Image 1 (cartoon, rainbow, N blue to C red):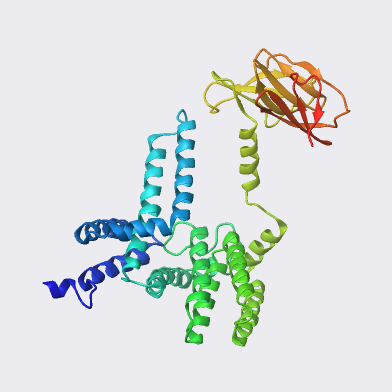
Image 2: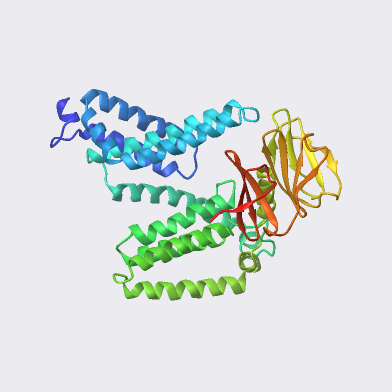
Length: 400
């Protein structure tokens, strides 16, 4: 029994169990299925059992000291999630807290587990690389099946919106991300033989390209360019040959695939696929002000209109509409007044936005663009710089 647990001072039975679970976890990492969930839980359980059984608390303490900076960053990240949940209790569900807890377990716990067993020399980075390639290989098989069964609909289709490889995953962008990761991993991890390295690079590059995920294209290109710049002196001449061949493949695909040509054109034209609408909506949300019993905002489609909501932003109703104050740019609450930056200057309201009165109109400080509260002062951003008011916007002083 003792021989099973110990071999050359290392617990071989524990090591075999750990490596088996690590293989299952790495291989299923790209699918997030039941195998992933079970292996993840088993790794954490094995860690706790091993830690308590061998009482390696000193090792755990050493790991925490050496990864102090990472731990602090992780705690800060979790703190921002918790603060976000606390500040938005009215609009979030209990799932938000569950997601925060799972985030801690999924990333914090597994990091600690891997550091612990790495310290015990149960595995090295080559083992992790090999196990990840197993998972990428399984995913690639599903992509090959999809490619063989519907090549015309994916590669040579004229519809780049609905086309694209996704394999066994639900989204082509996720596949593009993983194939881009495989491409970068092949460039870094596979040393010999070069034939295997180049075959893996071509395979992952091809799958990434025909996922039509532009984010994956840009991300992989930047990562490889950065890696190449850091290792420029040590790069083999054969890498130059691979680069030439890759560019040639790129050109051939561009000529043969209308869908690839469409996605490439969309990338260089700056087409955001609707993301600009989302970003503009976020900017609109940033312009909302909370009056306690209701929210107030500038109408997204009419700059002369102020809207209010008593349903946490689910529905909006008109509060003020008129051109006498000009076009509304920004809102802020200061004391018992609402301040508005408009095309005519600074306006205020003491009636929750129902009526507006001029507070400052003039061009001495430039065109007012936005306003915010800083303690007992108002800070305005204008076309001539940053200005501060200590008398509720009646006069302004330039801040250096």
